[in-house]
Image (cartoon, rainbow, N blue to C red; front, top):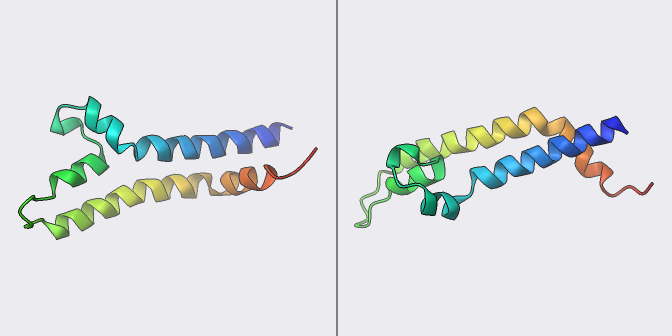
Length: 91
């Protein structure tokens, strides 16, 4: 029984991390200083309204944003798959 709770908590922690990390609108409304922006908000600062965006810097920041999610997945991978697999079981 404790094993199921461990998988459940790991799966829940992973999905909470992804949801809060990718929350764009909530951070846009609440944060006022550019120094406190999250990575997805920081990516919008690289966009230029005239079409002269810095695509190299945007690609580098997108890769860094992806790395944190990937590392979180790799840490919780075993528990995440076990937690998702046991949700369909009865009993």
